Image (tube, rainbow, N blue to C red):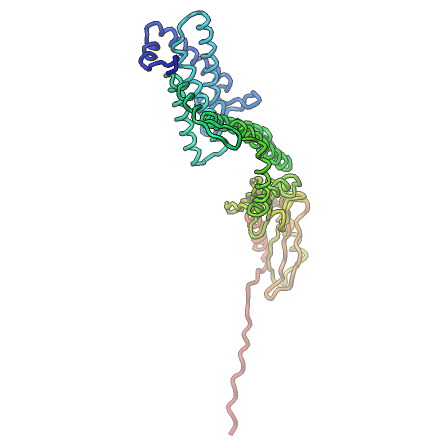
Length: 441
Protein backbone atom coordinates (compact mmCIF):
# COMPACT_ATOMS: atom_id res chain seq x y z
CA UNK A 1 0.00 0.00 0.00
CA UNK A 2 1.28 3.48 -0.83
CA UNK A 3 2.49 5.56 2.16
CA UNK A 4 0.34 8.47 0.93
CA UNK A 5 -2.84 6.45 1.45
CA UNK A 6 -5.32 8.41 3.59
CA UNK A 7 -8.39 6.83 5.13
CA UNK A 8 -11.62 8.71 4.41
CA UNK A 9 -12.27 9.00 8.16
CA UNK A 10 -8.90 10.69 8.72
CA UNK A 11 -9.55 13.05 5.81
CA UNK A 12 -13.02 13.86 7.12
CA UNK A 13 -11.64 14.55 10.60
CA UNK A 14 -8.96 16.84 9.14
CA UNK A 15 -11.40 19.04 7.26
CA UNK A 16 -13.94 19.15 10.11
CA UNK A 17 -11.57 20.07 12.93
CA UNK A 18 -12.21 23.46 14.60
CA UNK A 19 -8.97 24.90 13.23
CA UNK A 20 -10.14 24.26 9.68
CA UNK A 21 -12.81 26.98 9.93
CA UNK A 22 -10.25 29.54 8.82
CA UNK A 23 -9.49 27.46 5.73
CA UNK A 24 -13.19 27.08 4.96
CA UNK A 25 -13.70 30.83 5.28
CA UNK A 26 -10.70 31.53 3.06
CA UNK A 27 -11.97 29.03 0.48
CA UNK A 28 -15.43 30.64 0.48
CA UNK A 29 -13.81 34.05 -0.01
CA UNK A 30 -11.79 32.71 -2.95
CA UNK A 31 -14.93 31.27 -4.56
CA UNK A 32 -16.75 34.57 -4.10
CA UNK A 33 -13.78 36.46 -5.57
CA UNK A 34 -13.74 34.10 -8.57
CA UNK A 35 -17.46 34.65 -9.17
CA UNK A 36 -16.97 38.42 -8.90
CA UNK A 37 -14.10 38.37 -11.39
CA UNK A 38 -16.16 36.31 -13.84
CA UNK A 39 -19.07 38.73 -13.53
CA UNK A 40 -16.78 41.72 -14.10
CA UNK A 41 -15.20 40.09 -17.15
CA UNK A 42 -18.56 39.12 -18.64
CA UNK A 43 -20.27 42.40 -17.88
CA UNK A 44 -23.55 43.02 -16.03
CA UNK A 45 -25.91 42.26 -18.93
CA UNK A 46 -23.76 40.93 -21.75
CA UNK A 47 -20.82 38.66 -22.27
CA UNK A 48 -17.22 39.26 -23.16
CA UNK A 49 -16.14 38.23 -26.61
CA UNK A 50 -13.05 36.28 -27.51
CA UNK A 51 -11.11 39.49 -27.96
CA UNK A 52 -12.09 40.79 -24.54
CA UNK A 53 -14.51 43.43 -25.82
CA UNK A 54 -17.97 43.62 -24.32
CA UNK A 55 -20.85 42.35 -26.41
CA UNK A 56 -24.01 44.52 -26.34
CA UNK A 57 -26.58 43.46 -23.80
CA UNK A 58 -29.16 40.99 -25.03
CA UNK A 59 -32.08 39.27 -23.30
CA UNK A 60 -31.13 36.18 -21.33
CA UNK A 61 -33.43 33.98 -23.40
CA UNK A 62 -31.68 35.04 -26.62
CA UNK A 63 -28.12 34.99 -25.26
CA UNK A 64 -25.97 32.29 -26.79
CA UNK A 65 -24.28 30.11 -24.11
CA UNK A 66 -20.57 30.88 -23.86
CA UNK A 67 -17.86 28.28 -23.27
CA UNK A 68 -16.07 30.66 -20.91
CA UNK A 69 -19.05 32.04 -19.01
CA UNK A 70 -21.81 29.44 -19.51
CA UNK A 71 -25.46 30.31 -19.03
CA UNK A 72 -25.53 31.15 -15.31
CA UNK A 73 -22.08 32.69 -14.69
CA UNK A 74 -20.64 29.79 -12.65
CA UNK A 75 -21.34 26.95 -15.06
CA UNK A 76 -18.73 28.00 -17.62
CA UNK A 77 -15.04 27.15 -17.79
CA UNK A 78 -13.67 30.43 -16.43
CA UNK A 79 -15.13 30.16 -12.92
CA UNK A 80 -13.58 26.78 -11.95
CA UNK A 81 -10.27 27.76 -13.61
CA UNK A 82 -10.03 31.00 -11.62
CA UNK A 83 -11.09 29.24 -8.42
CA UNK A 84 -8.56 26.46 -9.06
CA UNK A 85 -5.71 28.92 -9.65
CA UNK A 86 -6.52 30.93 -6.50
CA UNK A 87 -6.99 27.80 -4.38
CA UNK A 88 -3.69 26.31 -5.56
CA UNK A 89 -1.87 29.59 -4.90
CA UNK A 90 -3.39 29.82 -1.42
CA UNK A 91 -2.46 26.21 -0.69
CA UNK A 92 1.16 26.88 -1.66
CA UNK A 93 1.32 30.02 0.46
CA UNK A 94 -0.20 28.29 3.50
CA UNK A 95 2.20 25.37 3.08
CA UNK A 96 5.20 27.70 2.99
CA UNK A 97 3.92 29.40 6.15
CA UNK A 98 3.58 26.06 7.92
CA UNK A 99 -0.21 26.28 8.21
CA UNK A 100 -2.53 23.25 7.74
CA UNK A 101 -3.92 22.85 4.23
CA UNK A 102 -6.38 19.94 4.63
CA UNK A 103 -9.33 21.87 3.18
CA UNK A 104 -7.36 23.13 0.19
CA UNK A 105 -5.94 19.63 -0.35
CA UNK A 106 -9.54 18.57 -0.97
CA UNK A 107 -10.61 21.71 -2.81
CA UNK A 108 -7.84 21.64 -5.43
CA UNK A 109 -8.67 18.20 -6.96
CA UNK A 110 -12.40 18.92 -6.73
CA UNK A 111 -12.00 22.21 -8.61
CA UNK A 112 -9.69 20.53 -11.13
CA UNK A 113 -12.31 17.86 -11.85
CA UNK A 114 -14.99 20.54 -12.12
CA UNK A 115 -12.87 22.50 -14.62
CA UNK A 116 -12.27 19.38 -16.74
CA UNK A 117 -15.99 18.55 -16.74
CA UNK A 118 -17.03 22.09 -17.63
CA UNK A 119 -14.46 22.32 -20.43
CA UNK A 120 -15.43 18.99 -21.98
CA UNK A 121 -19.18 19.53 -21.70
CA UNK A 122 -19.16 23.10 -23.03
CA UNK A 123 -16.84 22.39 -25.95
CA UNK A 124 -18.64 19.22 -27.01
CA UNK A 125 -22.04 20.93 -26.72
CA UNK A 126 -20.83 23.79 -28.91
CA UNK A 127 -19.19 21.48 -31.48
CA UNK A 128 -22.10 19.00 -31.66
CA UNK A 129 -25.30 20.89 -30.75
CA UNK A 130 -28.38 18.75 -30.26
CA UNK A 131 -26.49 15.44 -30.41
CA UNK A 132 -28.00 12.73 -28.20
CA UNK A 133 -24.67 10.88 -28.11
CA UNK A 134 -23.04 13.87 -26.44
CA UNK A 135 -25.21 13.46 -23.33
CA UNK A 136 -23.78 9.97 -22.81
CA UNK A 137 -20.26 11.28 -23.39
CA UNK A 138 -20.83 14.14 -20.92
CA UNK A 139 -22.05 11.74 -18.22
CA UNK A 140 -19.09 9.42 -18.84
CA UNK A 141 -16.61 12.29 -18.51
CA UNK A 142 -18.29 13.44 -15.28
CA UNK A 143 -18.18 9.98 -13.72
CA UNK A 144 -14.52 9.48 -14.70
CA UNK A 145 -13.50 12.89 -13.36
CA UNK A 146 -15.25 12.46 -10.01
CA UNK A 147 -13.98 8.87 -9.66
CA UNK A 148 -10.41 10.07 -10.24
CA UNK A 149 -10.96 12.79 -7.63
CA UNK A 150 -12.12 10.28 -5.03
CA UNK A 151 -9.15 8.02 -5.78
CA UNK A 152 -6.82 11.01 -5.51
CA UNK A 153 -8.20 12.16 -2.18
CA UNK A 154 -8.16 8.70 -0.62
CA UNK A 155 -4.64 7.96 -1.87
CA UNK A 156 -5.76 4.97 -3.94
CA UNK A 157 -4.81 6.57 -7.26
CA UNK A 158 -1.05 5.75 -7.04
CA UNK A 159 -1.89 2.17 -6.05
CA UNK A 160 -4.23 1.79 -9.01
CA UNK A 161 -1.68 3.30 -11.40
CA UNK A 162 1.01 0.88 -10.21
CA UNK A 163 -1.33 -2.07 -10.81
CA UNK A 164 -2.20 -0.78 -14.28
CA UNK A 165 1.51 -0.43 -15.07
CA UNK A 166 2.04 -4.12 -14.36
CA UNK A 167 -0.49 -5.15 -17.03
CA UNK A 168 1.62 -5.06 -20.20
CA UNK A 169 1.66 -6.52 -23.70
CA UNK A 170 3.50 -5.87 -26.95
CA UNK A 171 2.34 -4.39 -30.23
CA UNK A 172 5.05 -5.46 -32.63
CA UNK A 173 8.29 -4.53 -30.92
CA UNK A 174 6.78 -1.79 -28.74
CA UNK A 175 5.74 -2.65 -25.16
CA UNK A 176 2.44 -1.13 -24.08
CA UNK A 177 0.94 -1.09 -20.60
CA UNK A 178 -2.66 -0.64 -19.55
CA UNK A 179 -1.66 2.53 -17.71
CA UNK A 180 -0.06 3.99 -20.84
CA UNK A 181 -3.12 3.13 -22.87
CA UNK A 182 -5.47 4.71 -20.32
CA UNK A 183 -3.38 7.86 -19.90
CA UNK A 184 -2.95 8.14 -23.66
CA UNK A 185 -6.69 7.80 -24.25
CA UNK A 186 -7.44 10.53 -21.70
CA UNK A 187 -4.75 12.76 -23.19
CA UNK A 188 -6.08 12.08 -26.69
CA UNK A 189 -9.57 13.09 -25.62
CA UNK A 190 -8.24 16.24 -23.98
CA UNK A 191 -6.22 17.17 -27.08
CA UNK A 192 -9.20 16.63 -29.39
CA UNK A 193 -11.43 18.71 -27.11
CA UNK A 194 -8.87 21.53 -27.22
CA UNK A 195 -8.67 21.22 -31.01
CA UNK A 196 -12.47 21.47 -31.26
CA UNK A 197 -12.46 24.47 -28.92
CA UNK A 198 -9.78 26.34 -30.85
CA UNK A 199 -11.39 25.55 -34.21
CA UNK A 200 -14.84 26.65 -32.97
CA UNK A 201 -13.38 29.91 -31.63
CA UNK A 202 -11.51 30.60 -34.88
CA UNK A 203 -14.57 29.75 -36.97
CA UNK A 204 -16.77 32.09 -34.93
CA UNK A 205 -14.22 34.90 -35.29
CA UNK A 206 -13.85 34.31 -39.04
CA UNK A 207 -17.58 34.21 -39.75
CA UNK A 208 -18.45 37.18 -37.52
CA UNK A 209 -19.94 39.97 -39.65
CA UNK A 210 -19.15 38.28 -42.97
CA UNK A 211 -21.66 38.35 -45.86
CA UNK A 212 -21.74 37.31 -49.51
CA UNK A 213 -18.37 36.43 -51.00
CA UNK A 214 -16.54 37.08 -47.74
CA UNK A 215 -18.78 34.58 -45.96
CA UNK A 216 -17.97 31.83 -48.49
CA UNK A 217 -14.22 32.49 -48.32
CA UNK A 218 -14.19 32.60 -44.55
CA UNK A 219 -16.30 29.43 -44.42
CA UNK A 220 -13.69 27.68 -46.56
CA UNK A 221 -10.89 28.94 -44.32
CA UNK A 222 -12.79 27.79 -41.22
CA UNK A 223 -13.27 24.30 -42.68
CA UNK A 224 -9.57 24.06 -43.54
CA UNK A 225 -8.59 25.22 -40.05
CA UNK A 226 -10.89 22.72 -38.35
CA UNK A 227 -9.66 19.84 -40.51
CA UNK A 228 -6.03 20.83 -39.90
CA UNK A 229 -6.41 21.20 -36.14
CA UNK A 230 -8.26 17.90 -35.83
CA UNK A 231 -5.59 16.18 -37.93
CA UNK A 232 -2.80 17.56 -35.75
CA UNK A 233 -4.78 16.65 -32.63
CA UNK A 234 -5.24 13.12 -33.95
CA UNK A 235 -1.51 12.75 -34.56
CA UNK A 236 -0.74 13.97 -31.03
CA UNK A 237 -3.37 11.63 -29.62
CA UNK A 238 -1.99 8.61 -31.49
CA UNK A 239 1.51 9.45 -30.35
CA UNK A 240 0.32 9.80 -26.74
CA UNK A 241 -1.35 6.38 -26.85
CA UNK A 242 1.94 4.86 -27.97
CA UNK A 243 1.18 4.12 -31.61
CA UNK A 244 4.20 4.46 -33.86
CA UNK A 245 3.42 7.20 -36.38
CA UNK A 246 5.59 5.49 -39.00
CA UNK A 247 2.81 2.93 -39.28
CA UNK A 248 0.63 5.67 -40.72
CA UNK A 249 2.31 5.18 -44.10
CA UNK A 250 0.74 1.74 -44.32
CA UNK A 251 -2.55 3.17 -43.06
CA UNK A 252 -2.34 5.93 -45.67
CA UNK A 253 -1.90 3.38 -48.46
CA UNK A 254 -4.86 1.37 -47.23
CA UNK A 255 -6.92 4.55 -46.92
CA UNK A 256 -6.04 5.49 -50.49
CA UNK A 257 -7.24 2.12 -51.74
CA UNK A 258 -10.45 2.51 -49.70
CA UNK A 259 -11.07 5.95 -51.17
CA UNK A 260 -10.44 4.62 -54.65
CA UNK A 261 -13.18 2.03 -54.22
CA UNK A 262 -15.77 2.47 -51.49
CA UNK A 263 -15.19 6.07 -50.43
CA UNK A 264 -14.81 7.75 -53.81
CA UNK A 265 -18.22 9.44 -53.60
CA UNK A 266 -17.51 10.73 -50.10
CA UNK A 267 -14.07 11.98 -51.12
CA UNK A 268 -15.54 13.61 -54.24
CA UNK A 269 -18.10 15.48 -52.13
CA UNK A 270 -15.43 16.76 -49.74
CA UNK A 271 -13.14 17.89 -52.55
CA UNK A 272 -16.08 19.48 -54.36
CA UNK A 273 -16.95 21.40 -51.18
CA UNK A 274 -13.53 23.05 -51.08
CA UNK A 275 -13.71 23.76 -54.83
CA UNK A 276 -17.11 25.45 -54.45
CA UNK A 277 -15.92 27.59 -51.55
CA UNK A 278 -12.73 28.53 -53.39
CA UNK A 279 -14.29 29.30 -56.80
CA UNK A 280 -17.31 31.15 -55.32
CA UNK A 281 -19.52 30.02 -58.18
CA UNK A 282 -22.25 29.62 -55.57
CA UNK A 283 -22.21 31.48 -52.26
CA UNK A 284 -24.18 31.48 -49.06
CA UNK A 285 -27.24 33.65 -49.68
CA UNK A 286 -27.46 33.00 -53.45
CA UNK A 287 -30.78 32.01 -55.01
CA UNK A 288 -30.11 28.86 -57.04
CA UNK A 289 -31.94 26.08 -58.83
CA UNK A 290 -30.42 22.60 -58.83
CA UNK A 291 -32.61 20.10 -60.62
CA UNK A 292 -36.06 20.32 -59.03
CA UNK A 293 -34.79 22.19 -55.97
CA UNK A 294 -34.89 25.99 -55.97
CA UNK A 295 -34.22 28.31 -53.06
CA UNK A 296 -31.61 30.22 -51.09
CA UNK A 297 -28.31 28.67 -50.02
CA UNK A 298 -28.16 28.79 -46.24
CA UNK A 299 -24.99 26.78 -45.60
CA UNK A 300 -22.08 25.23 -47.49
CA UNK A 301 -20.16 22.51 -45.66
CA UNK A 302 -17.30 20.37 -46.87
CA UNK A 303 -19.71 17.56 -47.85
CA UNK A 304 -23.08 19.10 -48.74
CA UNK A 305 -24.92 22.34 -49.46
CA UNK A 306 -28.23 23.31 -47.85
CA UNK A 307 -30.86 24.95 -50.08
CA UNK A 308 -33.90 26.42 -48.33
CA UNK A 309 -37.00 26.77 -50.52
CA UNK A 310 -39.61 29.48 -50.17
CA UNK A 311 -41.92 26.87 -48.59
CA UNK A 312 -39.48 26.43 -45.71
CA UNK A 313 -38.28 23.00 -46.77
CA UNK A 314 -34.52 22.47 -46.86
CA UNK A 315 -32.77 20.24 -49.39
CA UNK A 316 -29.34 18.77 -48.63
CA UNK A 317 -27.50 18.60 -51.95
CA UNK A 318 -24.17 16.69 -52.21
CA UNK A 319 -21.43 19.03 -53.32
CA UNK A 320 -20.53 16.76 -56.22
CA UNK A 321 -23.94 17.53 -57.79
CA UNK A 322 -23.09 21.24 -57.81
CA UNK A 323 -19.78 20.57 -59.57
CA UNK A 324 -20.86 18.00 -62.16
CA UNK A 325 -24.44 19.17 -62.77
CA UNK A 326 -26.08 22.30 -64.12
CA UNK A 327 -26.71 24.97 -61.47
CA UNK A 328 -28.89 27.97 -62.24
CA UNK A 329 -27.66 30.84 -60.06
CA UNK A 330 -30.16 33.68 -60.08
CA UNK A 331 -27.91 36.06 -58.13
CA UNK A 332 -24.38 35.29 -59.34
CA UNK A 333 -23.64 38.56 -61.18
CA UNK A 334 -26.12 40.70 -59.23
CA UNK A 335 -29.23 40.28 -57.12
CA UNK A 336 -31.62 41.82 -59.67
CA UNK A 337 -34.19 39.34 -60.94
CA UNK A 338 -36.70 39.67 -63.80
CA UNK A 339 -40.27 38.67 -62.92
CA UNK A 340 -43.05 38.20 -65.48
CA UNK A 341 -46.84 38.26 -65.31
CA UNK A 342 -49.51 37.80 -68.00
CA UNK A 343 -52.87 39.47 -68.67
CA UNK A 344 -55.37 39.25 -71.54
CA UNK A 345 -57.47 42.16 -72.81
CA UNK A 346 -60.12 42.49 -75.49
CA UNK A 347 -59.25 42.96 -79.15
CA UNK A 348 -60.83 46.42 -79.21
CA UNK A 349 -58.47 47.76 -76.50
CA UNK A 350 -56.09 50.68 -77.13
CA UNK A 351 -52.95 48.63 -76.49
CA UNK A 352 -50.42 51.47 -76.82
CA UNK A 353 -52.15 53.68 -74.26
CA UNK A 354 -52.85 50.77 -71.92
CA UNK A 355 -49.20 49.69 -71.94
CA UNK A 356 -48.05 53.09 -70.67
CA UNK A 357 -50.66 53.12 -67.91
CA UNK A 358 -49.77 49.58 -66.82
CA UNK A 359 -46.08 50.50 -66.65
CA UNK A 360 -46.88 53.51 -64.48
CA UNK A 361 -48.99 51.42 -62.09
CA UNK A 362 -46.39 48.64 -61.81
CA UNK A 363 -43.66 51.20 -61.13
CA UNK A 364 -45.50 52.27 -57.97
CA UNK A 365 -45.64 48.75 -56.45
CA UNK A 366 -43.31 48.12 -53.51
CA UNK A 367 -40.12 46.16 -54.28
CA UNK A 368 -40.40 46.88 -58.03
CA UNK A 369 -37.24 48.62 -59.23
CA UNK A 370 -37.61 51.90 -61.15
CA UNK A 371 -34.51 51.00 -63.17
CA UNK A 372 -34.61 48.88 -65.24
CA UNK A 373 -38.10 50.24 -65.75
CA UNK A 374 -41.14 47.93 -65.98
CA UNK A 375 -42.20 47.07 -69.53
CA UNK A 376 -45.40 45.70 -71.07
CA UNK A 377 -45.32 43.90 -74.42
CA UNK A 378 -47.90 42.32 -76.72
CA UNK A 379 -46.90 38.69 -76.71
CA UNK A 380 -49.56 36.92 -78.75
CA UNK A 381 -52.94 37.11 -80.40
CA UNK A 382 -54.87 34.74 -78.22
CA UNK A 383 -58.00 32.84 -79.04
CA UNK A 384 -60.04 35.05 -76.72
CA UNK A 385 -58.05 38.27 -76.52
CA UNK A 386 -54.68 40.02 -76.73
CA UNK A 387 -52.04 38.48 -74.44
CA UNK A 388 -49.89 41.13 -72.73
CA UNK A 389 -46.67 40.30 -70.85
CA UNK A 390 -45.74 42.51 -67.86
CA UNK A 391 -42.00 42.47 -67.05
CA UNK A 392 -40.43 44.08 -63.98
CA UNK A 393 -37.27 43.75 -61.89
CA UNK A 394 -36.76 43.17 -58.16
CA UNK A 395 -33.55 43.37 -56.11
CA UNK A 396 -34.49 41.08 -53.20
CA UNK A 397 -35.41 37.64 -54.59
CA UNK A 398 -34.80 36.09 -51.18
CA UNK A 399 -38.04 37.75 -50.02
CA UNK A 400 -40.07 35.77 -52.56
CA UNK A 401 -41.49 36.28 -56.05
CA UNK A 402 -45.12 35.16 -55.68
CA UNK A 403 -45.94 37.98 -53.25
CA UNK A 404 -44.61 40.77 -55.47
CA UNK A 405 -46.19 39.19 -58.56
CA UNK A 406 -49.52 39.12 -56.71
CA UNK A 407 -49.13 42.79 -55.75
CA UNK A 408 -48.49 43.70 -59.39
CA UNK A 409 -51.48 41.65 -60.59
CA UNK A 410 -53.78 43.32 -58.07
CA UNK A 411 -52.59 46.77 -59.14
CA UNK A 412 -53.13 45.92 -62.84
CA UNK A 413 -56.56 44.43 -62.11
CA UNK A 414 -57.61 47.61 -60.31
CA UNK A 415 -56.38 49.69 -63.28
CA UNK A 416 -58.32 47.61 -65.81
CA UNK A 417 -61.50 47.88 -63.77
CA UNK A 418 -61.14 51.67 -63.42
CA UNK A 419 -60.45 52.06 -67.13
CA UNK A 420 -63.31 49.73 -68.10
CA UNK A 421 -60.97 47.52 -70.08
CA UNK A 422 -62.50 44.20 -71.01
CA UNK A 423 -60.82 41.14 -69.54
CA UNK A 424 -61.96 38.38 -71.93
CA UNK A 425 -62.81 34.90 -70.86
CA UNK A 426 -62.94 31.74 -72.98
CA UNK A 427 -65.89 31.75 -75.37
CA UNK A 428 -67.18 29.20 -77.81
CA UNK A 429 -69.43 29.90 -80.82
CA UNK A 430 -71.92 27.16 -81.59
CA UNK A 431 -73.31 26.98 -85.14
CA UNK A 432 -76.58 25.14 -85.39
CA UNK A 433 -77.08 23.20 -88.60
CA UNK A 434 -80.37 23.92 -90.44
CA UNK A 435 -83.07 21.36 -90.06
CA UNK A 436 -83.40 18.99 -93.03
CA UNK A 437 -86.31 19.70 -95.32
CA UNK A 438 -88.84 16.88 -95.85
CA UNK A 439 -88.70 15.34 -99.30
CA UNK A 440 -91.20 16.64 -101.83
CA UNK A 441 -93.92 14.32 -103.03
